[in-house]
Structures are given as structure tokens and as C-alpha cells.
Image 1 (cartoon, rainbow, N blue to C red):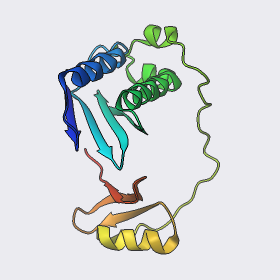
Image 2 (image 1 turned 120 degrees about the horizontal axis):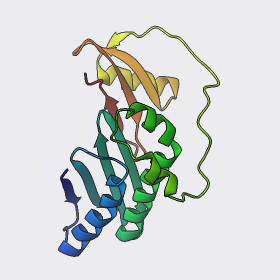
Image 3 (image 1 turned 45 degrees about the horizontal axis):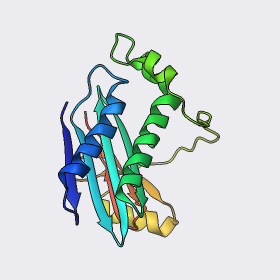
Length: 176
């Protein structure tokens, strides 16, 4: 497992890199083996944003936080990832039934007020129409939604476009 720390509009000092690595290693105690962890630190309009992605045997743990202080953002994003692990520890234990997830470690961590599991309250079926990603963004905007699922004419796979917190758009593509 390697920890990649990158900066955008920010110089990564050795102290900052050490702090990130120290905080990220705390999450690895829950798993026997993790993939390469990516951490992106950036400054946007005076806000210090941190994005952390932890790949673990086919699943991705991801967190993003933004505050006025980089160290506070790092702490908050790592707390968020620990809360995700605690919240989903039963599901993770089932997925890693053959080993790899340390449920005993997750049980010993005290995480304040973990929300209940989400309950699906509505199911909606609709035709997935072939189009390119630009047309999908237009359709999403016309419907005044934050996401839109479509059949990508370029890849012939079901994709999803979504509106990001920063107002830009994202595209989710399946990976097999």
C-alpha cells in the first residue's frame, strides 16, 4: 500500500505530507490489505479541500472535506471515512467473509452518532436512452435534476452524469 499525496494550488511540505500519512494509516488498521491510497490537497478560493480515496478489494471508500484550515480538513475527511467504515461494518464483514476486514477493530472505535442505514422509499423505472454525455447534461438541466442516467453512445454502457458541489459536472462509468 502506497499513499499518494498531491497538491493543487498548494506546495506539499514534508510536515503536511507526514501528517496526511499518519492520519491515513489509521484507516488501514481496519483492513489486512488496501490498494494505493490517493490524497488530493487543494486550495480553492481560500478554502482548503481534501479528497481521500481508499481502494479495498473492489470497494472504494471516499471522502471530501473543505474548511478554512488544511489540517482541520484532513482531520474531518478521515473522521468521515472512519464513520463510513463504522456505519457499514456489518456489510463490510460479510463482503470480506474470507478475511481482510477487521470487524473487531471497527467495533472498538467510538464514532459519535452513526446514522441509520438508508432505506429505499421509492423505486422508479425509466427507459435509458442512447445519447452522448453532453446531451445527457442538457437533459439533466432541462429536468432540473442533479443526476441523469443514460446509455452512452460512445461506450455502449449505462453511464450517469451528475452535478458536483463546485457546480461542474461529473460522469460515472462502470468498470468491470
